[in-house]
Image 1 (cartoon, rainbow, N blue to C red):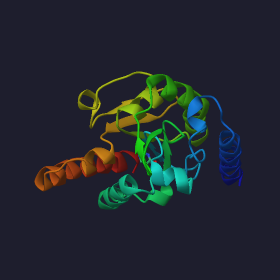
Image 2 (image 1 turned 45 degrees about the vertical axis):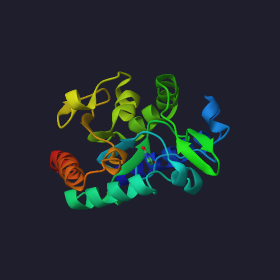
Image 3 (image 1 turned 135 degrees about the horizontal axis):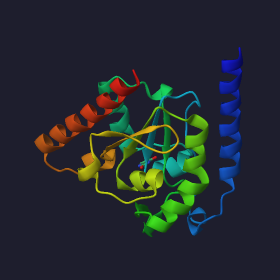
Image 4 (image 1 turned 90 degrees about the vertical axis):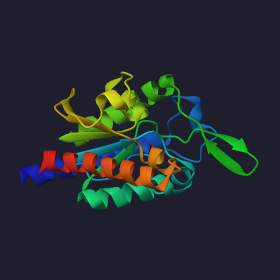
Length: 206
Ligand code: URA
């Protein structure tokens, strides 16, 4: 039918974007990185999850959220009743930014200018094609990439607001933040709050 043909077409548009992004040289981050890590998922997804940028393992695998933060995300999506394969998972910045320390590559926060250039070129177009009901921003870099504005997570968290393009935005923390909490009890409480945010998102699109 017309609908499934339109959806099939959108998946082809995503593939074309992915191919184009593979050769992206819009900012210097492409040089030391292994490859562009484009978003993953179907164009028909109702929920789009946006992280900051690929990490070490994502850079090597070419897929978003497959490293330690991805494991936390997977567990929490599961607890919230969200099927990752029905979501579209992507990042504000598509190349891994790092500093080399011996054999290790240490994550470096992307600059606002890097987020803005990358998000305008790729994230904005992923959003146009997928047109999700809900965009979930994981952390402040994602908020910047989605809205073009900087805001604190604390002031925006756990609230669903309309954004440009007919979608809604839900802001929550980044799973890496949970990994960095040393105290077990506090980490479990923060993880539960993150799961609550994700569940709120699932209920919004249900
Ligand atoms: N952190 C992110 O923000 N994105 C990834 O893909 C992996 C880790």
